[in-house]
Image: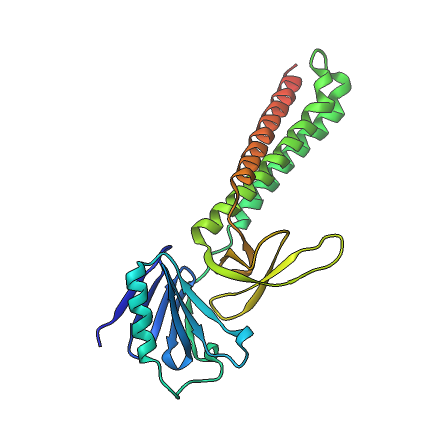
Length: 263
């Protein structure tokens, strides 16, 4: 039989051949035997492959979004027609074979290494300010303030920059899935808790202050337990503003330290 291929967004693809559906995503490739499939559903540009499960609440679902609506419908129809009537397994996730993409050395080492270096430099300048402030002349007043201002500015810029880089990383390398509302927590910090399933069939939760019955979340293949939602325009503006303000304070503080030292 000729392979039937459905291309989705974010370099995802479904391929139906040799009695199995092959799913390619950013986290790797997954071979889903037809015996593991409960049903295939196409809705617009989205195709869902739901696996068999003893409890409907524990069903694992693989989704491909951004496909052609016509091709999505044809793909779902072809796979549904080939599903075995009786030869299925109770838990389809047990026979799915996954080949995950190797994860490189976490980028966080480089990120936090740079932050630690900047922090050490600023602490050194601050201690030097304190020790020599009494001996300064015209710019001596800057010693008690320049170092702390630079340190606070660097902290603001680094925290905002890290948040922006995090959003960018999830947008570039993240896997998109749908999280369904599970329950609401009580107490002063009440949250709506959503449940989603990663590519390996493991269930995770995501807490949010607001949302409806479903949320579209993204997670990184090497950390599926940590998900994010799409960044809002106002949130993005706030992060950029905080990063620029922190950078300005940091540069101003360093200039003050340099002027003080050069006096």
